[in-house]
Amino acid sequence: MGEPGGLGGGLGGGLGGGLGGSEALPDVLVRRLLDQHVVLLVGALDEARATRVAAELMTLDADGDDPVTLRVDCGEAAFAPALTLMDVIELMGVPVHALCLGQVGTGAVGIVAVCARRSALPSARFALREPSTLLETHVRNVAQWVEVRAAERRRFCERVGAAVGRAASAVEADLDRGRFFDAEEALAYGLLDEVAR
Image (cartoon, rainbow, N blue to C red; front, top):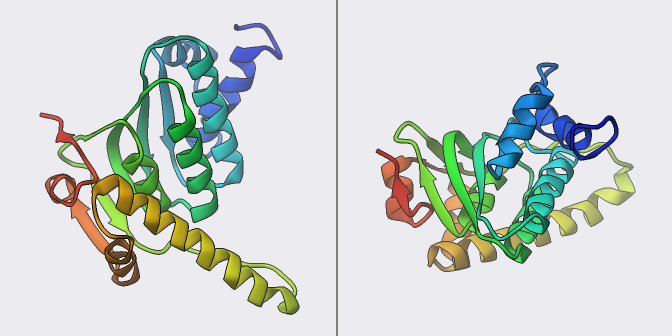
């Protein structure tokens, strides 16, 4: 597992890259986390980070029948990569347990919502709001991009609504105005099963 170019090296890039910046986790720590069936989602979620986290989750899924713990401190996540991870989590053959450590914002709320068990530290904060968007495209493609984004947003609200027991329209209304929760409020909303004590 720790051979160059092997599983340890590939996943080490995933966890190290998951932290943002240049401070990668040492390989020994990466292997130890994976041996304990722990995956980190830390920092802003983009397509590259979603791919790495998905690979780590799928690798642990194939590794046995033990549940996987996804530790989340992700304040910003666009809908597309969040929907990708939501798909992976829902298709896994083992349960994924989310533990929210800090900020859980935008699309990361959906990732936590679809986990089999969802808990948070008392200091965790949640933001159900529109993700920030930076678009660089030709002007003739803007209308098409708006349609794609609206479809992603609709799917996200439907899936979060189903996971927390609320109508998609209610989730969409909360997303429109921006809802911010502490851990106890997230529990009451249905985003969590428990607040760790």
